Length: 309
Length: 284
Image (cartoon, each protein chain N blue to C red):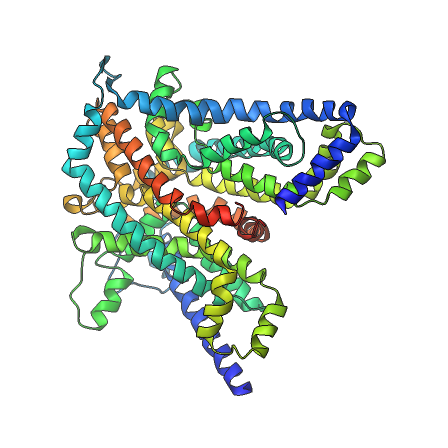
């Protein structure tokens, strides 16, 4: 439809002739130049290039020690055990969180896909964690997973000794995963809800006539193909979001007991602001992180281009 | 068949209620704790409303009130200013999206793909370079430094809004042209922008929420307490990792920080859903 509209505009323009397309061209340029140049070029493209340039230097602006070191920053980042740990952690995190939250979001969407005041109210309440700041959520979840929290209370009913989740190398990261699934699944639920709403009733009726009655079949033959676009969107947004995990880890564990919750952005932040004077290293690390995110996103590109993203 | 329907409906309602309980418990406790006297979280968690002698907020200790006064006067008001700037910026962007969708001029598609390419650059990845950039031009700990750099999902907004503009039927604009609205900017301001109001509202709300909640950039950029934003204050209040959190005061600050987002959410709930529904719509 997008390309169709574009064709219409082009045909209309041809018919109108050259004279009337001139103000259009002028307005177009006037509309586009200010935001594009002011914001995108100055504050996105320039820092992106600058980031790469910095990564080639030993960059210490606080003591004015700046000299060219070539690729040695990349070598030291890639051989550093802290960064390797961070990458492994974030990949595990991404795999678990994206999978669980996609299924959960779909489940929520199915559950709330009915016309009733009750489901509307519950959906709004369930959506609240998605709009509240991650820092607020983290602070609440420090209590939820503390020794006095409700999780330990539930466990104590089964006779389990209280576990101090965020102080244990085994449980700290799963607890953070659980917390993020809790707050991001409702967000992605809305995307699935919109997708479900766009399935025409005719399709459901036709499927009913064709004998698709049980839930599993309906999932296989209706929801899975019709919601492919929503799924791609949920997975891509989830991937990029999960790779950028920072706030929660910073607030709750600060990299965690024995680096068990260390993530790349933690590494980048620490290199810049804790061990000051290693900005070159931090820039190199962020470039590597960028390449990983890019690779994960591009691997989805074929499906996206099929649907004319 | 009818029985099966009833049973599945009952199961759905039970599941919804369970979800409701799970999602309400943390907030309910947060709310209760903010009115209590004791700084400790007791075990098992106490979900009863505070008794008369447990209430704290009505008789605050002197140092508490000093800390609590810090929140509204210093932080809230400037935070609002910040968010208004971001929303305004987002609305400024609207003509740009319109131009990408409807007007034709040389290099339009190349520029559009350039904007889409910035979608691929997440802000945290360029935050270090932005920090050094701000350092170079002496914008650290300033309002402009806080406001300008983070492009919070703004390329996504451009894309979504362009998508919305392309779904407006051509006939409407052609009718406007016949009625005598010749210059494209007039058509945009009189016809297309009012039609696209839901999309504009949704993107404005999303930039409000995301700039309100942004943590990483203020954490890097702000070095003086005068410019602290709410998430930073929350983190500051929490204290160092591993120290005892004063749960009642902490939760009071937490509730205060949540109230503005909650008000925006309750008032514009319809647009939240519509805003994401724009994303969810299949493009072809």
